Length: 353
Image 1 (cartoon, rainbow, N blue to C red):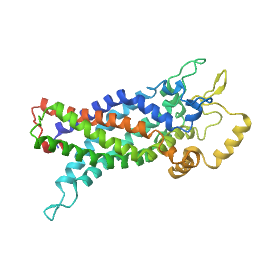
Image 2: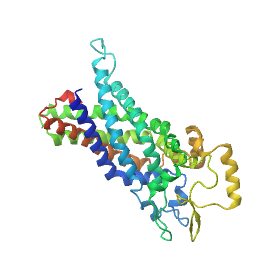
Image 3: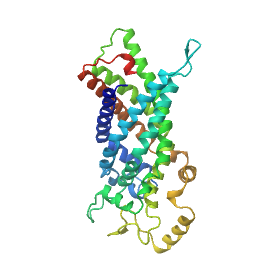
Image 4: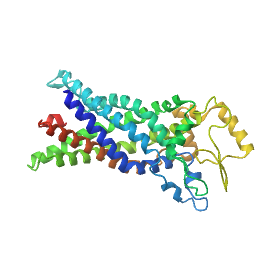
């Protein structure tokens, strides 16, 4: 892989990430709120259990931190993915007239390596983003706060808490990409073959982008539904990371705000009565929410909400992933081809696979 080609990959990946973040971020915010343990209390009406308006307010809260982090993380992902895939294909030994490693396994392995690199960069921003998405700015009786800055303030005394969600993020993204990318590459190859056989292949930038977008969207939506339980657990862990960010602090973890209907902390959560606080504190001492394992959280969700609780937000995640993956990989592929064409390099089919 040439240096210029590597630069193309970084630029195309960054542009793709920026485009997706701006367009589908509101759906991601709503999904986070649906999966939150505070969903019923914060976003439903007690009278009829219907969704209240606060669910759809501040849907771009935390977007800044994600844009800053996804630009380098997406570039790192695609650069690693293309590099590892190229190495594995080049060194794949022959076996019985074919190759020892099947192509889907190569795609899964390359995407897995890429995710581990990407998640290391993305985890702090993902923790900030999901906690910022939960900041309650819907109450008109108190001034609005900057959700991102408010969240960062809670991590100021323990910034390493921002990486507590790494294993959860990697645990979700590894099976997701291991499922998505082999399906994506296979669907893309089938569509191109179908069009080639019928003589309708145009080999234009638009066609390549649309084929990639359709393939990524379909593969991504299937993978999203299958991995929704892992995503629900990941959301709980990342939201709990802020509760543990104040470990070792004396007193309150953040400034309190008063409202007509009670006292609220920095994230808009109601402060319970003294009796409830003592009871909750005793439970927290034995097992802080930020220290619970994925299995413990999954069991809690099953106990409280059943199997449906593990798939909460699954339909929205499938739609969001279909749009996001389609745009993300579609823009990435188109950008990569466009940048190569500008250098006068005509990309061949084997460079597009």
